[in-house]
Image 1 (cartoon, rainbow, N blue to C red):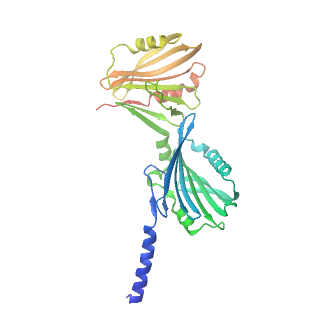
Image 2: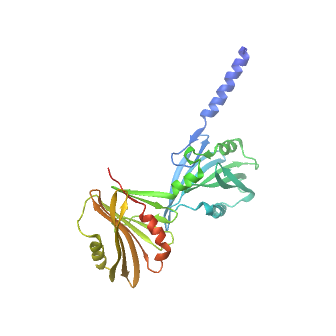
Length: 327
């Protein structure tokens, strides 16, 4: 049975412990691969870095407490990185951070976060008389950089240690293989038409005023894709005649190679293969075309004739990612 002294002491300790729990801010953004606890709500900012393949989005959450800084940073790439190339990605990231803020490397080890393998370094920032622990890990299509900096010796401070120990994989990201497959494939839905594509091979171009629809480019620039959708049933003419007549308005020549029909779910689309010559270069085109109650759709991919054989498989896979959505 508790004495009055023990009961008071227990209540005091309980209040302290409960207060420390309440003092922690749970960090768990819905679409992030990591969760953590900050001593209080961190500040957030975002930067978009233009690349030839689209914007690279850098999202940062950080908290300064005296001379201590806690941070989680996420980099979202326009092209899903291959997990097989993660070591190069880690090395480049650590090298870039080292150039932006030089320090003395004190430790460099492997880092495991659930099913995901990453790297961990500890750097002495001599000028600021601090140490900084940095962890990098690729989860799905995003790179996460976790950092804690504290003054004094190499051993983490209590605040830094609590923060670093709180880092975990978000529940919806626990299965690495499922996550990689889920984030590799992206979808574009326009009206009653949906296109699924492999984001390790194709990237979506930034829209331009002159674009009639959505365009994609293969990561080596050897092929392009145009996805045009209208909610209306625009015409009742043969696709081969319409497409070739349109091409001849600006091209030096246009010739039909193959015409067929293909099932996409419960809908039948026209499939065309044709050659177009522009500025002395032959471009082989392969596309699906449809007009019906769901609207009008053109999904066309092209590549120079000289490289078409190398990309034909990727083009066929992308075209087969088309679905006509019916009620």
